[in-house]
Amino acid sequence: MIVYTRKHTAMDKLQGYRRMLRTGDWVKFYPLFPLAGAFITAGLSFDLVGVFILFSCVTAYGFVVNNLYDAEIDRRHPGKTKQGKNPFANGSIPKREVAGMCVALAGIPLLASLTLSGTGFISILLCLIALTLYSAPPIRLKDRFAADIVCHGVMFGGLPFLAGYILAGGAITGFPALPMASALVCTLLCCEALIIHEILEYHDDLGTTQTTVVGIGLRNGVLLLGITAVFSVVAFGLISWWFAIDVGVTAVMVTFLICYPIYCCRTLLNPAAERGYRRFMNNHLFHTR
Image (tube, rainbow, N blue to C red; front, side):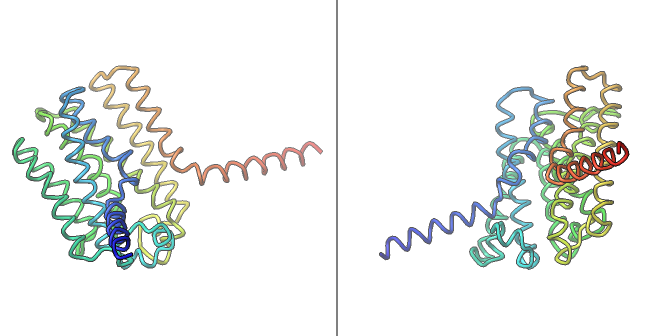
């Protein structure tokens, strides 16, 4: 019975570590940006594997440090409490172990990048600093109006893209440069990602935490998302024209930039579309009669 209890406790602890990393929240999306930067430099090569491993650590650090400083808020957040996304908030993992995870997840990519290049090390360091400033007091940009969206775009989009480009051997020369212009689109896309998250979490965030969408209201949040999406499409269109990017690639990217916010907000758009359809049909029937 004692052996079973120890095994059970060890498994619970491992599950707690896994939930702290929150890989399901980021592994399908955020690694794409450093990988895209590395791909522009090195194409399909082994460099992509190294960049993926390094930025898996960097991104996981961002989510762990966010859990560390969001513990009190997450205890009052119905959705996150129910899903158990923050084991530190419910006491499953002590603070010293969470701090140890942060040190390990930040130290591994820093040391590894230092062996590759000085500029690669600096790019990783800047990513880690942005991720820390986003969550950690007293600056805590995620609680500052508009700064939460801008910082999220930079720390998950623009900086990782440039870091992947540099770590794979790329150099930024001249202005305007394609890597810098591409980093802008990545930044806008990750700004959209946070706006979408704040829109979907609006009712849970209301009264528990202050986000930009909570500050401006749900309807204005949707409007802000639309404006940002338009900017991303226009920005990529200008980049495609200036750097003579292939028409097929341009069409695919523009389609993605248009569909991404629509797909992510489908849970809100479907009921709205149904209500609009019913209203249209009722009005149409009324006028027909």
